[in-house]
Length: 343
Ligand code: PLP
Image 1 (cartoon, rainbow, N blue to C red):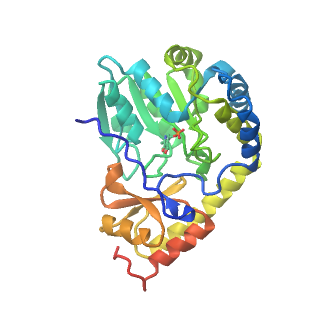
Image 2 (cartoon, rainbow, N blue to C red):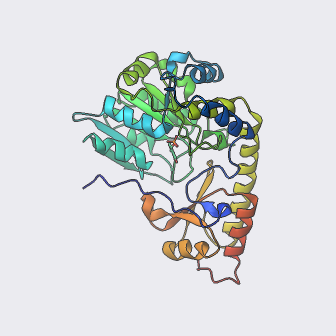
C-alpha cells in the first residue's frame, strides 16, 4: 500500500508550455542528433556493457578513475540498483520529506524501511537526518521539489556524523546553481561511504535517452556492477552522451538561459503575489492557496505545471524554467486582468 506508482507530470499541449518535468527548454546540443544517426547503423550490435569511452571521459572531467564511475539507464536505474544492493532484506533508508519520488519507490520496492525527515525552511534538516541509523542516507542537492541547497559545511558535517553505510548525494540539478553555497560533493567520494549521482537528463537535455551516472569508491561501483543489467544503456544513448560531453558550450548556454529566466520568473510570480521558494535548480516551487485552480488556469494558456500535492507538498505548484516563449505564456497567464486565481 505504501508502494504508490511514480506520478509523472502532464505533457503540455504545446512544447513551449512544457513546465512540469524539469526538462531542458533548449533541448540537446545539435551535435547529439548527428551522433545518434551515426550510432543507429550499429543498432544490430549490443552496446558496450561497460560504456568504457563515456566512463573514461567522465573520469577525466571529474578527476577520478574510470572504475569509480557507473553509467545507468538514467540516474533512476542507479537509485534502484543502490536499493537492491544496500536496502534489500530488511534495510533502512533515510531521506527528506518529501523526497525525490524514486528514492521512496525504490526503497519500498525492495521492502525496506524509509524514515522521512521533514524539511526545515524548505531545505534538508541534515542535523535530524544525521541522527538516523540507516543503510542509505539520501541527500538531494539542490533538492527536488524545492530547489533548495545544503551548504558545503553542512554536507561535510553530515557525511562525517551520519551512521549510514552509504550517503548518496543526488546532484541532478547542480549545474544550475549560482550560490557559492552550492558545491559538488564529488571530492568527498575519496573518503569512502559517499556516492554522487549525476544525470544527462537536465542540463544536457537527454531526458528521453536515459543516461545517468554514479561516482563512488571502487568497491561500491564493483558491488553495483555485479547486479546491474549489462546492456541497460543503449549504444545510441552512449553516443548521444559522448557528443553532449564534447560540446561544453551547449550546457553553458542552457545554464545562462536557466539563470536568467529563473530570475525573471521569480519577479513575475512575486509581483503577482505568489511566494516563491529560493531555488538553485531549473524549476521554482510556488506557494498558492489554490493549487488545483492554478494548475487548470495556466493549462488554459497551454502551460503544464506540476501540482505540489503530487509531490508531497500540497499548497504549492512546481514550475520548470521554460523557453523564452514559455515565459511569455506564463506572463500572459498571470496578468491580473486575466481569469487567474488569487494568490
Ligand atoms: N534525481 C532527481 C533529484 C531528479 O529530479 C531526477 C529527474 O527529475 C532524476 C534524478 C532523474 O534523472 P534521470 O532522468 O537521470 O533518471
